[in-house]
Amino acid sequence: MRKSCLDRHTAPSTINSGRADLDCRVRPMKNDEFWKFFNSVAAPKLELREKTFRRIFEYLDLIEGPLTIIETGCVRLENNWAGDGQSTVLFDKYINYRDQDSICYTVDNNPTSVLECKRLVSQRVQVSTDDSVHYLSLLSKKLQKENKFINFAYLDSFDVDMTYWCPSAIHHLKELLAISNCINNKTLVVVDDCPLNANFIPREGSQISILGAPSIGGKGRLVAEFAAASGATVEFTGYQAGWTGF
Image (cartoon, rainbow, N blue to C red):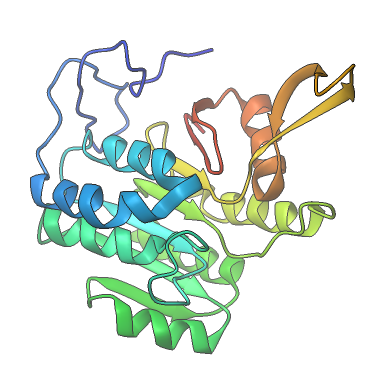
């Protein structure tokens, strides 16, 4: 497995927005006001997503210059931290505290959710109503013309049935393919709602035996398979999973 710049045993680093290899020698940027908000307001309420959202923003702190963030599936209910994660709100807070030039694009096919999202975030977030794959295909062409790459993609548009996970997992793989021309080896791709799956057999008492290594499931199952086949790097797993190196 390739070494990740999020490895806790490496030195702090920054990542340039070009196509050069990851540079693990420079100190991360400061975004103190955001971290005050995250630690005091968001982290205590995020529950299953707290550690992985922390890893996301730690990674973004390593990138120099303005960010381009895309999200599929916008915030749809105010203060639903544990249920949905309030991702759009977090991204809005992050870019507003970070600089004046970073931008977040988010899309949802539910007009009611879009209206609520627009009420909850600033104009730094461009909120659209559309099918996410169609929207990302058009956005990808726009960014290509502007010679811009996506720094961070957060895929969370299609609700998942953990038993019948296939439709959601296929949709999120389509989203990744729709932006494939606008990501590089430093783009962080994260899928929500993808806890690890494991096969097991019961033993005596409350003991179980795990058969094989746990694997990423839920919405991210097919993205994880594609990532493994293409040599991408797993940055973290949990209730969310993140990769670089696509």
